[in-house]
Length: 504
Image 1 (spheres, rainbow, N blue to C red):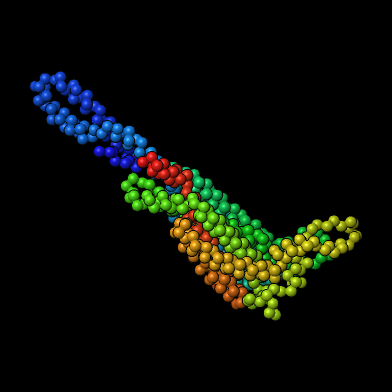
Image 2 (cartoon, one colour):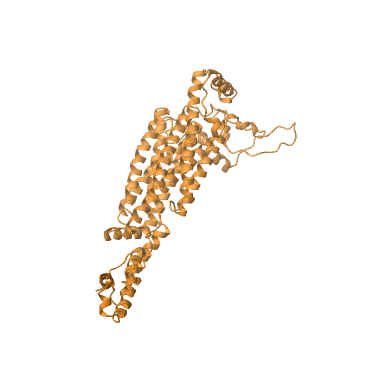
């Protein structure tokens, strides 16, 4: 009878341990033939008889060991990161989602400049308790341009309200750093918990959280000084400055938070996906699960999946660009310029050319002045500087671009949905489901954006609009996570399985 198929090295080792003693009983039989009959009936005879029976039961058929060795070439179960790491990533992503919402409310309530010092670490965690401490913070805020130019009539109670929003935002950032960083370091140091690629991702996310905190203070510092004070002398007028943070730094701050959040979700989804595939390679797994795993691995490496992955990545880039222009709109208060949709004043789809391309928002160059008594002549901006400056600094143009990107994203999402349904049998089943969720959330996101614009940017609607962009990015990150190429161990197992089928 042919030997059974051994599917893992551990099973082959167990079989070999049983086969190895079979050689010894053969020698025992040859020696015992020369022993007198009286010795065979001694007290050791039952033990020897039992040993002969055991040896006969495990004695393999001729060539069985060689066949077992040839068919036991399947590798060990692939090394996959433990699911606890994925659960920790998802919990951390939930905290990042929360801080994004709190940060949006902090910006909408104009609370971001209430704390005029960085105070990193434990120094900035203590909330003022006594009247003296509150008055000390109040006096610091009175020296800021925001108080002198806008909030001169603010009371101490009003200051406490905006101070608590900014303080909560900073405390939540510290909590995220500790909550994610310490377990991530432990996972990276503990042997057998993470794979090398996941280990590097955890370290990169930890570094991103630290960079995010530094970037937050750089953003706040931009609102404590008029940026036009350092510009060269020029006759070209500038728009009136309003004390607020730089919208470029605001977009960088928000974009980094999005990147950290998407990295957490993407890594968690890939870990859970790899664990579900790895379970089919363990000893005792049913043939059906092994077959299903092989089919999923083949789909993940197919040309159709690679093409679908590229389309999903393009959709993620489009949504991210739309969200960054949303940060420009928030930083410039551009949502208050034209509070109507779909027109932008007097039934026009776009405002007049003079509003879209205003020379005051062009990118400046440092022009030398010949002498101290010379008067600076008007410097006409070049075409490229005029366009680029207005596309990034003019509130009217920025709102128009954000509208265009939002509508383009909505239209592209419907095309993406149609494409997902067409290739749903060629890619893993979870990817089209996540894509459908992204399309549905995009429709809701557009409705939230229009409502926020029409009702003059109320805080609840604007916060929901920002949260909606995070949800859309979540669905697209999940699409890319389930489409990610399997790790090297899983690919090696699939190759060994294919070789084994050919050999048999």
